[in-house]
Length: 87
Length: 87
Image 1 (tube, each protein chain N blue to C red):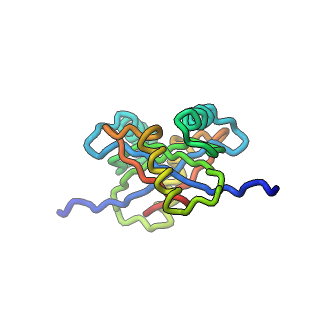
Image 2: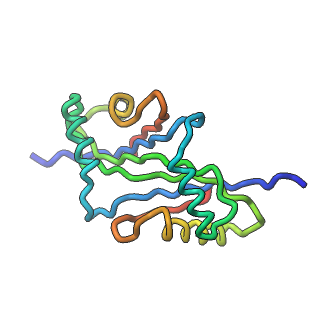
Image 3: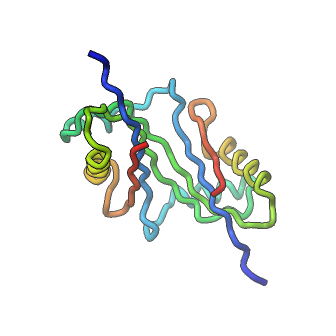
């Protein structure tokens, strides 16, 4: 039996726009101190990259599964938005 | 005087492939426990989104500046790779 091929997927998790991002603010100030002027609205998110075994599931079903993973585990829907894509 | 327009930029920071990612491994195991089978090679990176004041700098110069920011501040070049792009 051949090893199953796998499908690459990406989930980007961002703080919702109305949620303060103190880490982003700290980076913005530090960039200013390093001499990088004119930088604003720095926001820091997560990018989760993973592989899913290709068990013949359709692309639509895979996307549903990925979305469920993001909702249940990768993002906190109270304060974060996410963007899930199969690549 | 009109307020300066600004340019959106993104820096994606990933652990180098040869660096272990314990956070990714923990997420992978947790996904398995939640019933998501067949997930592997979970890697977690950062996505930094920011705006730069458009002071008339050329796109090439902006990209250089962004790359410098990434190298000096956003990524740790010993263990991380980055991908900087102006959007």
